Image 1 (cartoon, one colour):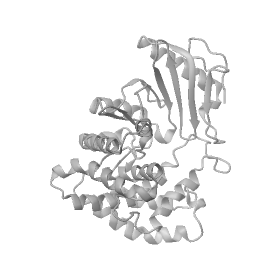
Image 2 (cartoon, rainbow, N blue to C red):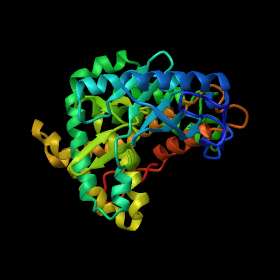
Image 3 (tube, rainbow, N blue to C red):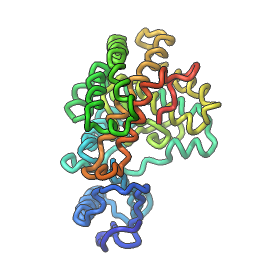
Image 4 (cartoon, one colour):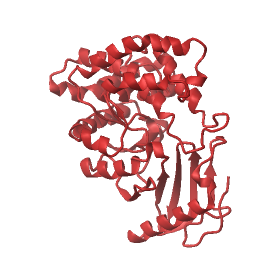
Length: 362
């Protein structure tokens, strides 16, 4: 859709210049508000000016129940990306700044952030890992990226309390049983979409779930930042450099939960018939940096499997993080059904295919 009034200053969210994909979601987002678009225009223009940059007027983007993202072309070449988060993931703008301070080179450098409005502006970071794989790269590129990501998580371990101070959700294993119980309360996102008997079965599973979480918590792997939605389109890859972005689903969690969404992405790219071997290689590449702490590879694989199983609760919880009104009416954001889809995985027995690190989960 082309949306917006005529706008000066070279950013042109005006008719014919701002092409916004709504993804088919009949959901309310801030993009629908002319005043909001004007505020974004002015904020982006000011931020660009401070860096000696100017937009061409060409804007493309997408409006989803969980974010509004705009790609704004720059005069002289290149582009910047604007992102607005809903209240449930408003921490992302502050997190982006903190990550760049703690781990420069592994994340994008923000050009500007507004933590009150949950807005972030970054330069374009180059090709996606998805594009590199589409061009014919082998899975070893994924392996390299996951090894680098594990090192990033290890770097961030000392910042756990500061992550919580920024508002990053606490999905450490010891918190997950209460999270699951809350998700099963009447009126919680996803409960209404569960089929008859599923809610009771999940409640009956709670004691076992608590035991799994206690095992993870006692295993000696410290909590760290989990991207919580790491896939091919949230990694920028250029040569041997891998940069991680799009942290709106992030949480403080058992780090191995990362493999939950990764494994789903592998299944989609390679097909389930061929994905098991790729999953094994990616899992081992990711786990290798953790062997430096004296953990045996076999034990790390067991913990990765367990982290993937209990981690579905965090993914279910994340579906409540939409813009106010985005999931109103007939659940136009699909939040309930998607949350229920993740919760059902706890009832499906072990989430692991034979020899794999985790079942397709996305």
